[in-house]
Length: 185
Image (cartoon, rainbow, N blue to C red; front, top):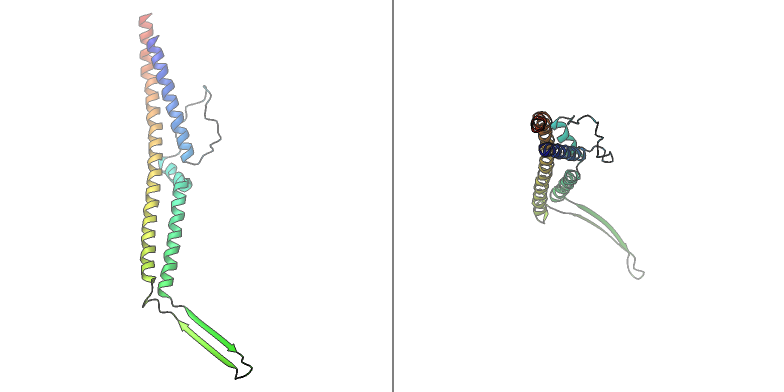
């Protein structure tokens, strides 16, 4: 009885590990999180129906950390584009003026101006700073994607490992426990 109880505890633990890992994969793959976690006792064994590459692809397109990192990278790239434009394109200014003096002659004026950003100004430094931000954000995207990949691979490996352990426990270990109980009886 003690051996059988031990095997039943192992079965329950492995089944719980399998359910937890399957739930983790559901969340990482963006499946319905409102689905009931508990399976009925007579439900067939679940296996991971999607290949690991598909699970990874889904998680990388849906995880908030990755999406936020990619959005920050897009913003940094736009900032780099703006800094480059500011540092390489001159600005032109045109102005007209008029003044009226009742006691003297009326006056008119015109003004034109152009900046020379490639000769002076902080444009080059802004371009370098923007390029550094882009590199930092690219690193952040890689880090976020690596973290998601690690989570998915770990959850997938836990599910597969738990299913293999469960098969051993239900097969050889259960038969051995039954034989041990029969022998003791």
